[in-house]
Image: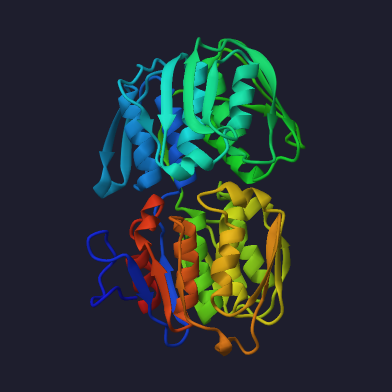
Length: 444
């Protein structure tokens, strides 16, 4: 991987593009990715709502976690960042937040805006949350409606029910309300984590199909570690948080990011060889470990150990797959799909259109640059690889300021010459060290 005339990791001052160098032969690498963004931001919320001091180890340092930490600090929560040891020390406020003297800037972090909106509405007070232009296009209306349905006063100021979000609420005591489940599971996760601030019982009934269900299980597991229990039915249609519960400070170890792990697994699927990711196993909280099941269907071999997952490639065949539970890895899978025999059909990920970018429509645009046929549907897309794959073209890839677009489509360049990723610095959202880490991984 190079950028301009040097081979250093990209930076805002150095370059706005990075060229990916093909790998000669199979990969044989091992890595422990940084901590999970999803778990880090959930643990930060629970620790902030607790009484006492929590220590979060293995925490991710990235744009998404940085805006969460910055907002919590403005709200009066003491958060000490130890970057060298990937540790956060959080002294909780038990929900007694101070109104900030300025807007809370949440960048383009969906977890931050949704989790904080719920927590601040339950706590009560006057707050305003705003972000980058793309955040003003990402819907939060269903969460606002649910909060207002149990006594809050929350307004989404952009068209279509999008941020900025203004909160002018008294504290929520108890209640029951319906929550839309088919746009983002983060609405429900935010509500669940905020509910212990109420003095009475809080109940949520899900309307529509609840997407990304593993993330809801993750939320409940993190809450349990901080001393709060959630009652729910087998179908995940009804949730109850009994009153008189409070979060307790604790020491919490954060798993490596399973979404980030997908890129290294995919490197082996594309180039052949073996990729070992340390710190994850079959019992991981993150549903995205299920990405390796997709690779196994494509012909890779997967080995599960107590503290690692290994994938041996290459992938050889296309698959037809429902990726609703692993939707953050759709871009990764489609990169692999360029190098196998037969089409790959990705289904049931319509919610990917309202992420950092339209991860169906814009993904289709970029994949077509390699010279392949892409059929786009409302809920997914199909990839028809060339035969042989050596007929692929190089391409300059636009990232749409989407970290996953950059990290996933860079993998194509490990085998196909001429792949250039624009705006590589967008990976700072979740994995600032991604390009140097990928270079070291394939270099092994």
